[in-house]
Amino acid sequence: MTDFSLIETLRYDPAAGLARLRLHLARLTRSARRLGFAGAATAGERLDEAVRGADRPLRVRLTLSRDGTVAITTAPFTPLADDTRWRARIASTRLDSSDWLLRMKTTRREVYEAARGEFSPEEADEVILLNEKGEVCEGTITSVFLDDGSGVLKTPPIACGLLAGVLRTDLICERRARTARLQPADLQHGRLLLGNSLRGLIRAELVV
Image 1 (spheres, rainbow, N blue to C red):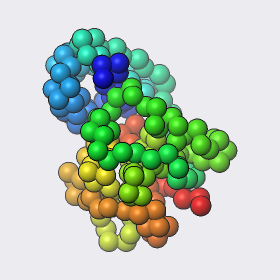
Image 2: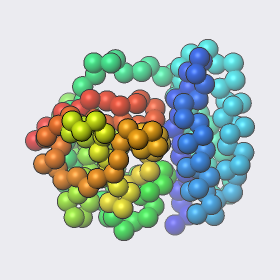
Image 3: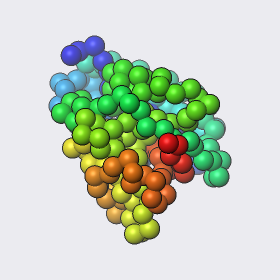
């Protein structure tokens, strides 16, 4: 299993810099250490170089290959409007909770692409995957959060088989979210939110 790279996708804003940079670098370093990838120590410097002098918001994508090669691309980024509402559907494609690579962000995305391919863009803005036990895991590009009115968001635990999302980690560290196993039916009770470090939290409606 060497035919993949690690990925980090960050948001850059001229006034605030690279959002959640410390958490992105920590996840990259942790994953690289576990997988035996070289080069993670240079990622911070390379990211700084990539956005130096930028005067508009950017989507910044970094990949790290096993031999330590770091590649960075940038593209203009337009934040979603505050009143954006996404339509979410649940895929029949399942995640395997025993697959430890799901906990890391890599270019190995076949299962997510299969889930996304189950619905057209007109049918769903995001697609949620369950594991082999039927537990809610994550979206194809987002973490899942449920606001049940308790004041703290619920998000599935890593043990269900999902990515340790940077936004998810940030919200847990701030005690704005906590882990809880969720069933699909739970997502219809309360307020469903999807999110990642690039776009933040997005209000969503589950379409059944």
